[in-house]
View 1: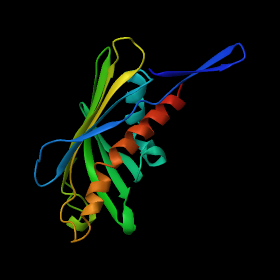
View 2 (view 1 turned 90 degrees about the horizontal axis):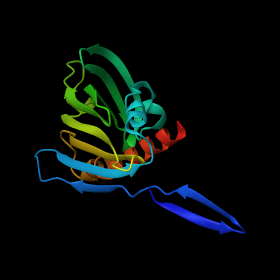
View 3 (view 1 turned 180 degrees about the vertical axis):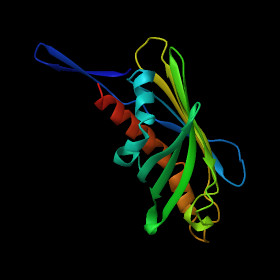
Length: 187
């Protein structure tokens, strides 16, 4: 981790500086878009996994998330109903199948959209898949973080393409920063 040393008299204090969050857009996978954010976080993978697997708390810290309600489970997965508050009063609902996996020095939470017959196309999104992946750094001082999201919001009214950009490329760093802040608060 990066540290800043501040000299005050004979004392030297250090504080961890947040690593930058890099976001790249992956080649087209029409009709949606795929982005991956990477960074490091000064927390072990298991702590980061606890944060992203605390689905019921998403509304308290994840950007644009009104709620995330676990509604079912099976071997190796949890079904979670998501509700997002978007710009211009838009609300989107959808169900995810979340599949956690872990090893001694890493963990991963993958997801995919599960269609809901009770939602009309305007109430939901067309598709999403992705994952959170946390791997211990070689020096044991934190984790490498990868957050990958494919999202297809479905039909977007003319002139509202900026919402797709905002909810994908610009929202990824905010989600990573929220997980970082939550994990560092759990020390």
